[in-house]
Length: 391
Ligand code: FAD
Image (cartoon, rainbow, N blue to C red):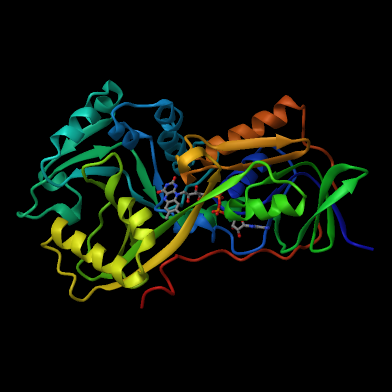
C-alpha cells in the first residue's frame, strides 16, 4: 500500500516564493506540505542579488509605471517582517544593507533628469555625499553622484534558513511528481509513490515549473527563461557596495551587491546590463575580462590584483511575455485545484502569497482536519552560491 497523506495546501518548489507562502499559510492554521527535489532555496533564490526593490529603478525609463506602484510596498513589508512585527517573523535574518544606491559615475544628466521628473521618485530618493557614501566609493578620486534608494538588501542564505525553520515539519524531499486523479479530477499528487491529497496544489518551482506542468499533461501557463551571465569577484580590498551603476540606457550598466565570505572578505556579485544579452554571448574568460575593465574604469582606486574571479550562468524563470519583457508583478494562474505561478522577483514573494491567499479565500478554502504527518525525508538547505565557485 502506498503511504497516503492529506493536507490543505500542497506546494511544489521550495524557493523563497514557496517557502514564504508555506510559512504564511501555516501561520493562518492551514496544514501544508512543501515538496522540493533539490536544495531549499538552491534555484534562483540563493543566486539572486537579494535586493528588496521598491520599484524606483523603473523610473529610469522616464516614468513610474504601474509596475513601480505594485512593488512600492515591498520594502516596508519586508522591513516589518525583519523586525519581527510583520506578516512573518524574520527576526534574525541578516540585513546586508538598509539601502540600495543609485550611482551615476559621470555626466549622465539626461538620464537622471527623466528619472527625477517623477514626484514619487523625488520623495523616495536622497543624494548622499562624503562619509554617507557607500564604503567602497569613499575615496578622493570618486567623482560621481550617489542617491540612496529606500530599498534593502538581504543575506538570502539566512532568509532561507529562517523560512525553513518556519516550515516546521511540513517539508518533504521528493523527486518524482505525478498527478493523483479521482476520475478526471486532480485531487493531489503522487510524490515518489506517496499519495498526497490536498484541497489546493501550488506549483512554485521556478524554472522547474514547465516540466511539472508537462508531467500533468499541461502546457499553460507558458514559461520563459531569461539567461544571465553574472560575475563574482572576491578580494581582500573589497568593501561593501550595493548599487545600480547607471550607464546611458534605462537599465543599470552594472548592479553590484556584496556578500560576506566565510573568511571575512567580501564577494562582489555583478549583474545588470553586464550580465544580459551581450554578457550571455561571452564565454567565461571574456565575461571576466569585460568585468575587470568595467571595474578598472568605475572604481580605479580598488586594487584587484589579488582578486579571484568566476562567473555564474543562471536563468530567470518567468511567465512567458512577448519580446521577453520583464513582467511587473507576481504571477498566478489557476486551473481547478491547481495554482501555478512565479513571483518574478524574490522581493515580490509576499505579493505571490497574497494572490494565492486571495484565491483560497474566494473559494472558501479553510483549514481542515488531517492526521498527524509521519516523519518525512526533508530536503537539505542550500548554502551561499559562491562557495564552491571561489577558493
Ligand atoms: P526558485 O528560487 O528558483 O526555487 C524553485 C525551487 O523549486 C527550487 O528549490 C527547486 O529545487 C524546486 N523545484 C524545481 N523543480 C521541481 C520539481 N519538479 N519538483 C520539486 N521541486 C522542484 N529578485 C529580487 O527581488 N531581487 C534581486 O536582487 C534579484 N536578483 C536576481 C539575480 C539573478 C542572477 C537572478 C537569476 C534572479 C534575481 N532575482 C531577484 C529574481 C529572483 O531570484 C526570483 O524571482 C526568485 O528567487 C524566484 O523564487 P522561486 O521561489 O519562484 O524560485
